[in-house]
Length: 401
Image (tube, rainbow, N blue to C red; front, side):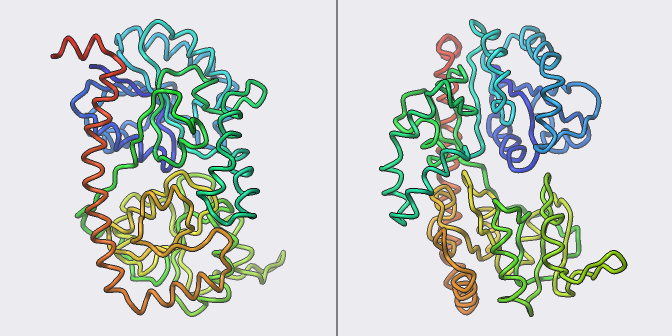
């Protein structure tokens, strides 16, 4: 069976997709992408799939994708249509953010009657999450608030006027791959459309150290506002001033432009202070295992999240994780992380982290058990995804039997 995927996005969506492609190694796979760095693609995909690169080497990330797509979408659609006809595909899976643009519905209509169409939404829709938060402020219970808001989620996902990006009811796709049960709640809470849950693949690596990193007490990855940047500033500036802290800039929309003035308050036209000596900033890093292994506590104060892959990766490396108790994150970390309520104060975060550092061995036992649970779940989900995709193309499945 042949499976194709369009668009290899930046950041966590790219990592998710690369690992999904490796998981489907039994299928013939093809990738159409706007990321034409052949060396980087070969290193990531290792010949698992055939790659079709669109255009020259544009600098496209989530911050520039909208403008690029507005200008190039017709040309891109022609390329995808020609590509799909040439290969004779059974399935096409649209990766985000391509599914977040309303123009893509025209491409879906043009492909109808050919391969079955699937999509992978990676991001929680902001408007729907805001509605949930309004209720959560009253209940302080995610489960209760979901029960209250679920009917509204269903209505929004079907509302032509709302035009929820990536909605399986409005987008026109045949099936959806969700990276958590949590994100599915926002798109198809009553399971009315064909879908499958495929959590991000996580594994512990044995890579040799490449960066020569020194151990630090706290690490945070790209603390943008939606990733808890404000809470991080309070912890870094007041509660953990004497601790070694490492900040990793993300693959797109780096947080440091916003954070630096608050970490270096002495600033004028003639003078700009350096970052405090206890704070280290690194750019985009591929070998995250080395980062986790040289960190006592990963700060993960996220404000909106579909899964939280970084937090689960850290647990696999026996790194204590302090995270917001968003249900999608809990699907990954279980009881192996420190959970903080959504509206917990910086003092509550500081107290919980300080307490955990005194019982590191107990935390290690929980992390080991959770890692094994994740490994078992992944094996089941890989097999389940294969069967699900085969069921979308019954003629192929019957022929193979």
